[in-house]
Image (cartoon, helix red, strand yellow):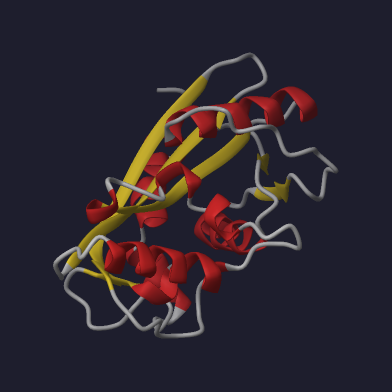
Length: 202
């Protein structure tokens, strides 16, 4: 397991919400975090069919382009009654041509569950795969999950993505209703980050 010994980390994402979460999670370690958008990097094509495959594409592209260690996150929501969809296509379901519309994406997921006459509760999970890649081609992989239910109607205006329809096990709030600090303690990304920090920053 390779340790992170640099003082600057590229986060290979153009998603402002995701970048903010990662900055908050890494704040205690004194690392300067730069986003791919701040470095003017293009978004690489995500051509793999798994979270780890797409995370590797983004991390290695960022490391090669900048000469910095690069951290990428490929994450999404997996709904059991939809055979794991949207999965790696979580963000694609929100694409409109004029930006992403996650209300549309959440509605699409709900409508698909209803069309299938899927019995409730609608179980699912958020999954996060982190890849930390170095310019020499080495990488480390960390995976995190949080299980829960898909709820309807949407609840809460915090968070981003599918947060308003996901209620984690053991809670009566959706991610969209939670204080961001509470969500950041229990999220799929937090689970993956605990493993990353323990093994690469500890």
